[in-house]
Image (cartoon, rainbow, N blue to C red; front, side, top):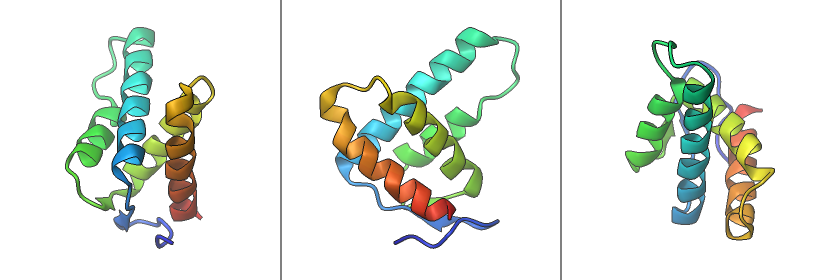
Amino acid sequence: MPAPVRDRPTVLSFTREEAWVAHVALLAQLRAAVDADDSKPDYPEVDALEAVEADSDRFEPQHVRVIRDALVSYLGDAPVRDRAPGRDALQAVNAALH
């Protein structure tokens, strides 16, 4: 179980499938954010995407929160193939946040 997120990086070990679903969820969240407000100067989803794509297991607290929000939003309408790894990724993220 990952150590709870405070103000320091935390370790999240995603499987390849979990990382893929987190990636897709973040892209969907980013697309929605851009569509909603194109004048926003930065998007936290971009930094979280870079963290997932870096293939590292260390995530900053803000990345963990953004990943959680993206997964929660995505899993409501996710394709069947993404649901189990998405739930597993969400469980790991939630454990890190508590």
